[in-house]
Length: 199
Image (tube, rainbow, N blue to C red; front, side, top):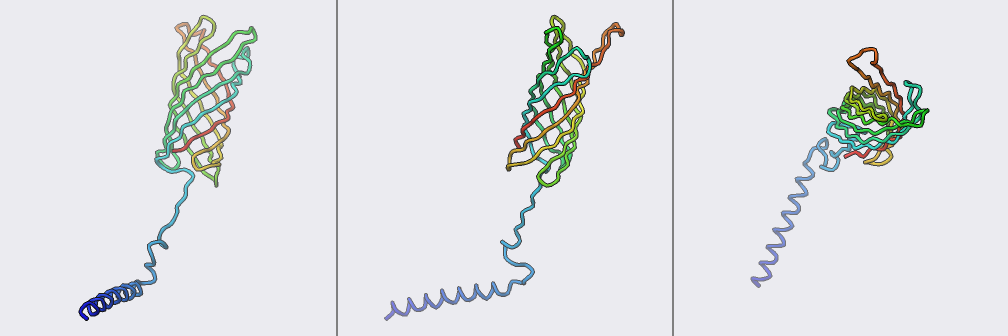
């Protein structure tokens, strides 16, 4: 008999706790709602703290000097988003152009980059300016000098971590010598196809 009374008391206590919990749930104001209803997903194509690794393949199309033929280039870069729109980063590039005399000009720019990014849907528009130095080699002549590059581009984010796009820029490569009559500025536009990994 004692066992039956003990079991009945435990059942009564358990039911009382369940009903009390249900009553408390009914007392929650409607504007507070449940925890799940307060969860929102705020999606931004670009946001502060994003990191990009980028690989580019491109065509190097010399405007000056005219003795150079269209060549090729490859580059790898890193970008960090300081804000939702402003970025800093760096890039290392290797390019080559043959001459009409069948020789080759090699150029290796190392650049620091600042950029502005603007998102429209899944598209990212970029304007950037890069500043650094470039190693140039032609036959037995080598030169290291200033390199400046303005660039614009558009990328499409086709997956959570991946974007692909096109960009166009202009390498400005001044060469300054003690004899100022030999000073010269190379102007080499390029067009690139690039892929970015976002993390």
